[in-house]
Amino acid sequence: MSKTNFLNTTLISGSCTQGTAYRNFSWNYDYSNAQSFTISLVGQGGLPQNGNQFTTSNESIAFSNMFCSWNQFYVRANCSDGSTSEWAGPINF
Image (tube, rainbow, N blue to C red; front, side):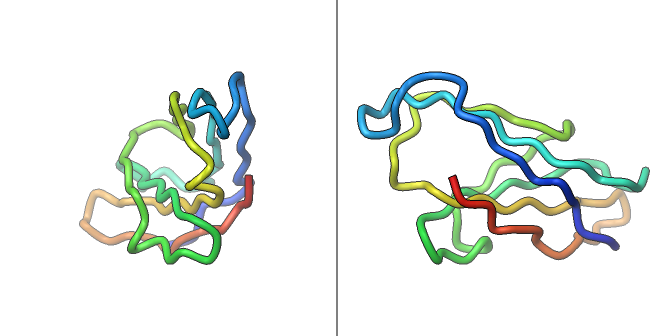
């Protein structure tokens, strides 16, 4: 299974120092066998398998009320046969 690509994140509004950051995360997956995606948010140098993980069926997800303790993200594809791709990332934000 191939990795996701073109990872991107954008601050929509707010500030992480005040815990009001609203941030969008997006990526591309060029194959049709992905059933869902897992995004992992970690602190600097954190491992994706130990991060705060969220699953979505879309190629983007947004979070509100974020603090600065998370500053990198990874994403992987989850396939219908139960397999997963390698983690793509990290992307710093």
